[in-house]
Image 1 (tube, rainbow, N blue to C red):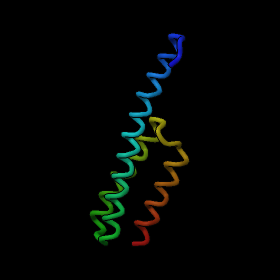
Image 2: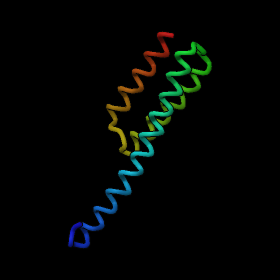
Image 3: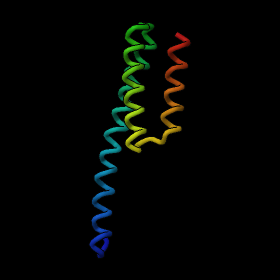
Image 4: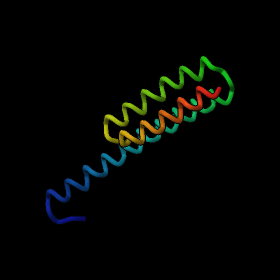
Length: 86
């Protein structure tokens, strides 16, 4: 544990941000898993609804800095590719 007050605060802030990022990443994984299940079942309407939610989740996480812009774009591209191959 650091001795300097500002360093102590940075440790606390970093832990708070780590936990928040973990929550967001878990939401992303859950949403993409639901989308993959919809694509695997072959239900195009359900897959499209899940696609919209997945894109929204990825965009929100990229805007908050949890994912980089390019990472979110790459994942969205893969989601669209899977949808178009249905």
